[in-house]
Length: 609
Image (tube, rainbow, N blue to C red; front, side, top):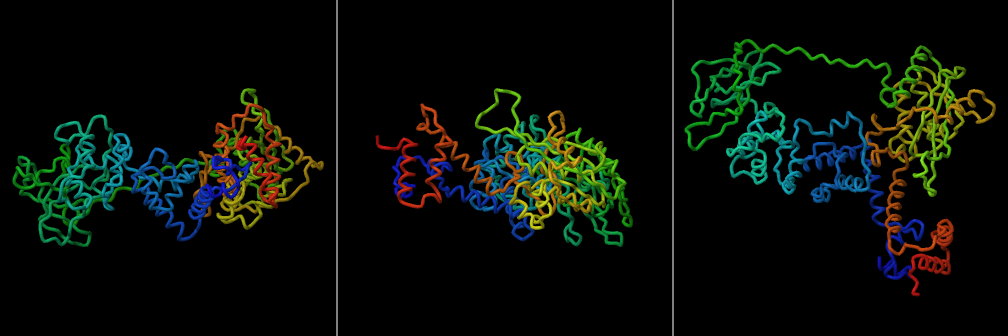
């Protein structure tokens, strides 16, 4: 910065925000260029159909698992997670996401993809537990196992009641059991248990019963030694375990059956009955046992076994357990999945459903659509700001020669006349019949070009232009409904009765309570990750949006300087226009450069007076 200020003949005390201010000198900050490039590249890579997209998702999932994050990583607030900085330095994709989150930019995914990014199965995340008791230093010190990774405190408790010993956890995770317990495990043991023996869970902790059966190892069919096993009833809803010792393993056409001797508690150790039982091999798992130095033999694992239920089901060697009936899933009867998918407003949804039902049997439908963008005055005088422009948008459509089949809705965000026209076309297509020919008359040539442009069909091209989300929905709707769409341009205010009528509907939305909320809740193969800013979809060129956001931050930083406390009012339009005459491509001579530097010094009170 010293070199830049010296080259521009500015004093050393010149604020950096003045140099990077878009209205003053307007230099691009290297950090702004880096943030713009890295966030844009992350969005393009995630939505591309290439190996780069797969590797990027793998890197993000790796960062999520190593950081013990159970919710989708795109929803996390990294401001309260300072321990992720070392992980971000090693992971380029994760670093790009952290930078985007610092600008309140994230990626929206649909509910189906969201479920694949969530780690479920417990009630008490271990990350939340570490944050609550200021144990975040242990987050990256847990030697995670690929067989039994720990994400919830519930996983360390047997049947939600008894805390595992260190050796039991290591045996379940297929890790070496030698050595003393890790420090993080001792801290968890101390904080989670209420009794001195560190076995019973604290009453303040609400835990779910973890399914440890799926993580136990299967029996070895050709083992030379007699194995100690856990046995579970062959019923889908049974959770009764007993312990047994294998006598013999039988192989037959129906599968593998195990003959074993049940065990019992003999003063703290395991005793074996003389009578044998036979059960299918898929009901048996290798047992986890501990040796007690004060007792001879293996300690009886009472915490793993059920004290109230006993295994009474005896299976002969030539018989396998009966298969459980397939579950029946009842789905709600939805008449139109597209309207229910994308329309939240009940009044608008009901109106569109009525029109859709009346047009269901037709093979050809003609619509007139129109949108409006007009200035608006706030209802409350307290919120009026003379430096802001208030607008109001509306969209409407009507079936040709049938004025009763019409709908209108209010819009917000990203004000544009083309946006309102595209929303009107989208609402009309929602009511169109499947496999029908749809003809739409509109007075917006820009909307017709954006829909018919074949270059906008790829996700990379789509995300680079405005109104990308509504164009994506129109493309999905045309593919899934298999409609043949024809768009025809009509001249506005030319005496066309239907066009004038739909124009009045689009402008007269003040008394209509219907509201269209354009949100990203369904994706396709082209765009699966949509950029959002504070939960608002970015329907604008992402690179330009990030630059505008960074410029706004620089302007806010400059406006809060003490030197900007002007006592006399300033005509900002004249000031910015005067500076603009000498900066950028207008600065074509040394004389103009000196004029620009003099104006900046005078404006920032940097002259030696």
